[in-house]
Image 1 (cartoon, rainbow, N blue to C red):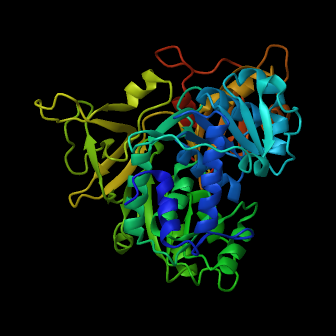
Image 2: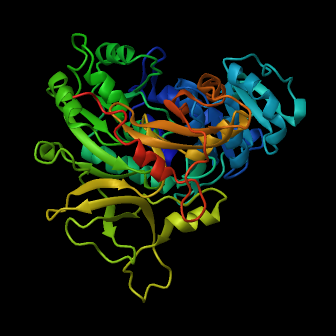
Length: 531
């Protein structure tokens, strides 16, 4: 039974080499995909990638993205998927923070990184997918970085992969924190394999499934579409959609049986006219990244009458945590369910004692899916990854659990209900956004004296990003110019939906910090739909 994440793919390839692994415009069998993964692994080691070195992958969803991710793991390295919608400065921060030795990206993205090369001190080589033998924008060897085309890299020198065990690092997934820039969640092979087995078991994934990968592979929920499919020998159809209508056409054309999405996308799909046969083959659909509105769920079930809905909750630090079985959806549609297989969920008070039924408390996740902490960040790791409460004193080495920071309650039958977030993270369009990261761009514009970014409940986005700003002295309040600065520096989902101006300083809390909570409270309901 596979214990390493790349063996989910390689074991299926050995068992069923002619089965389809990837569908869509460029279909590959498991045997073909495994051969490219092995070639990438050998080339990476020959290029000087050491055991547990990081390989960053900044590409949209395509065959060679999958090859690079699983090839990095096969090499004994650690893959770092970078969201393709990020701007060059943000991608450069992740590549630098992870200390990546190798970067796999497109020609266009490689050109955009040229101004940031000085900050990528650990980077030694770039593999340019779709580019010529030497990467564009920087000659081979410029700045000490060797640049090669993807096929040239695979056909070059090869070496044996490094030895790896299931406790080793396999991936670093970057996710926004409540303050500052994104932080890297370190996942082991054990985390990824245990997660794939757990989710595939309750979704009942099987070899004849065709799973649509519509979410970013840098998102743990998106990456899960690959790992669960490969664990069960299913086919994954990679899809980079611009419009929801394109996704619906793909459902019909590819005969998709499993679809995962976040609430903003589900809301879009629920409001559209579905083409004939779009949902005919679907046997399940899943939701995570926020609560599914009840009306949206009802509309989706009308459009997919044979598909079973799985409502889930998860956090990158522990992959998935809970799911609501489809047979319970009608009875408790607002529940996030119970613990997934091979995990335990506790609801505790601040002192670590168990909450009573229906008493709100913090969700604490224990088990094989608990990540290895935050990359190079002992302070934040100590805050979130803490000893499991109630352990026996005789156990000298404490078990570490994830303290989620999310408030939930558990009913008398053991089902969990989400209450709220204890931090100031903004949850928009399925992403977690740091208000500080948005504010950094606002301040950099030179147009403001001070500003606060925060989330306000929104009917389709989950939360919309709202900014309250005080203009810089002698500078007129210019919302259009400020939004232009945001669009130039941030991906679309991080651009504020609204900017409010005020002449006086922003309110402070007892610690002298800008009181985001008060500002958000004043604007609660501002995006509510008209009755």
